[in-house]
Image 1: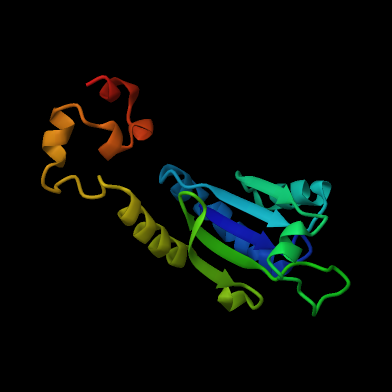
Image 2: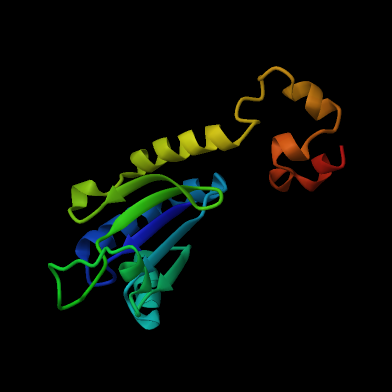
Length: 162
């Protein structure tokens, strides 16, 4: 999962980052990866932000700033908007943190290639079927031992039955 902790709709840096994510989203989705954005915007502002960048993933409103307070990431340099310092996290299953990018400055935010690299590492680590030529995988497949090794939920229903 890619989790974006965002300043919100008013920030041109956040807008640009989300445009880039929206452009890459077909690649992200085909790789069974989720994206979630949390901002300190109101629900209405979050919906408007999501629509303005053409995002197809979940945007959550933290207008009460619970995430900002719990993570101690208040952007004290902007008391007017009181946003959180923007961060992008790549999470493994179980919401385990793999990498964190501090996006206070735009160049601190990950490019799509940075995310691709991180997501490749995570996927290689969690998928026993990363390399189908790994010794024993073909035999397991042919023996019908698919759910533990080949993540049954990703398989075509016709293949699950054997």
